Image (cartoon, rainbow, N blue to C red):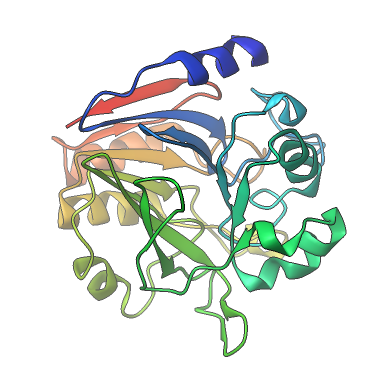
Length: 271
């Protein structure tokens, strides 16, 4: 599907009560449409990463409908200036929700600070002019980095919207206290997890994320309705075989629904 057709689909699709529409963008990028706003999370829609495995499903300068853009941390596949600059220019109404650790990149694109929202971890906030309540949660990629002025470096988010709860993990591993933190949150209907594994030699170049058995173990523990597998498609050399993910879910929780959205693919979730 072409960029313009995906954009038309996003804009035209109706949102029923107790439902949300989600589109995969590759890596940890997603579009989420609710009844009163369109959100983008961690979009990487440029050729900044020249080794990307597939073209951007949407061209960022064609995105005029974004109301909020959430970026979990400053790594280029999550906070891409060549995506955000044209996208935020084309959507002048959009606000950027991120961590203060991203301020150097924000200043590079010259974004006015009145368009910024820096959520405080564990404090729910309703995004202005929407019914979407988000809660920023700390992630660890690999450390649980925290600064008194800048807050947590790596973020995840829960979104409570239109009767649906989404947990977006960002980039993370399971750290001490992670399970307890998730138990204190409302049970998510949809969990978006980074499942591209990690190993010593790869870590000489890049950081990894959850192993398949860790993702399936989390799914078994928290009984999510659907798990969306992220971070395992865009960058050759930073992925694991999809079969390993399928095997882990078959072994740990064979009744768990999970899905790997292709770039531009729609999932319409109704509770």
